[in-house]
Length: 221
Image (cartoon, rainbow, N blue to C red; front, side, top):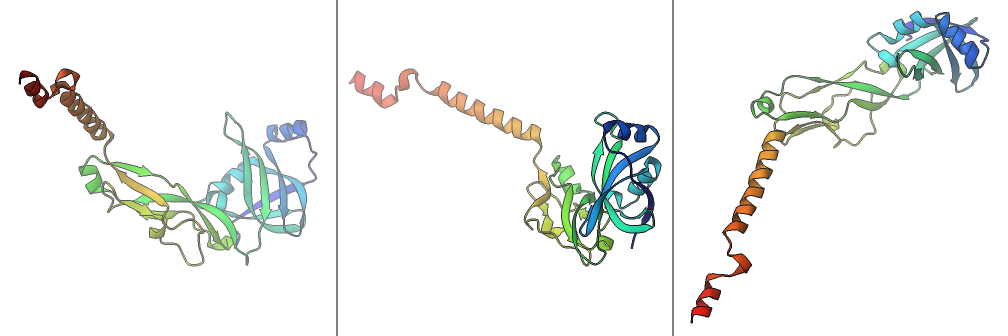
């Protein structure tokens, strides 16, 4: 079911100048598209769009978009943002079928505390921040939790460890690493320095020119 309602005005003029005037008036230009739907240029109130995208579902919120006398179930896709202000300057609304699977990305939230990893001065290395999934629009979770409590140096939490809700699947490699416990960098650097000193010490202990005791003994004889 749709979680948020947006009213869109159709028939906006195209071009960068009209789009700039729309944004100055507090509206965001956009396009509605989807299977079986002709693309329609629209605009929505910037404040309403911000409110719609600031729910727990974020950009995966299902939006009931009212365009004239027509109501469409959509999701906000391809958000274009201002390079400096980071505000949305254009949005594409994709029409979705509530009974058909779609692809989306769901943010990953790490939960728990890796106590043993911290005791060993290890480093928590999160390598995956969002998981690509397939599900019906209404089944998209706001986020996915990954428990890192058991992490130690050398271990990892993988995609196969994520508990996916009913109706949600992913095509990502089950062995892909979500988060790993790494050795402290200072320790690694220290071991490298000690190794170099050991090599240098061995070289210094060897006689110049590679002469050995047996070589010396041969000359005296």
